[in-house]
Image 1 (cartoon, one colour):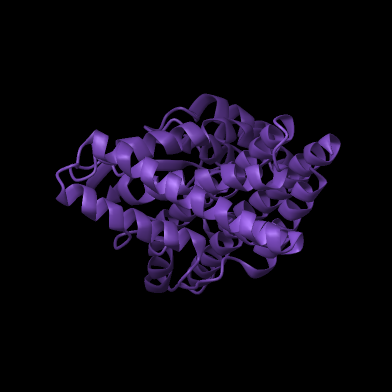
Image 2: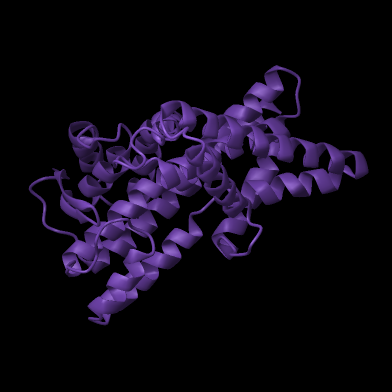
Length: 329
């Protein structure tokens, strides 16, 4: 378990320092290509309903877990350090916190320079909504909502499943590091499936059901645990941590997604702003409920405060998980 703790810590530091490097054979990009390939094949074969989506999930999960386990075992036979290095590489590739902050820094910089066109362009890289008509407040709201939601999906859920896999590996006498990364990788497959085919539109409503449900299930516990870590992060940032909890307990289930509003509603309360509300997407208008109703609209300075809140919350989360792993060593 001590090796699991070291690998997670190093992966976290690498992500904070280097971000997510863009290259052709990035594991998450390979997952995306695999999903696109099998989606095309299954839908051409007429398997474009729920069962086709179930088959897609099973195929992609099987392929990537088999590839990871086979690669890890081969490298372990060659040299254990190579195997641990491979585990570190995959773990690091599954975290995506630094890149999120990088994109939001671009948004914040453009807004501070009164360059709405550049701010819209920057925010369009990370959101699915229609950005052409967003003003300064709308762009700030979109940025903060995206950061809060991705704190769970892009960071907390992967490390939660890493911990879960490590504990199960320890209990059943398996390699804690390998099982930890297997669980983490499984989550990333589910998350990528949800982002690519889990849309609730006519094209993917049935076919994307399995991927979306798997993502909902795997985010369920981390979304709720996020309130604990965000409370600690808000306390360290001297934000209104108690207001964050109050608003989260009131508004966390207002979105259609069972998980999306937990972190968003806490951030709204901690910052004293409102998030959500009517949103325009490329396929139409959606009347999303307000989170933190009664507060003012966020401004560019709230983007930076959100980044600080999430950074400190991330350190708390990683510290707690490493403590548990070391305790079990």
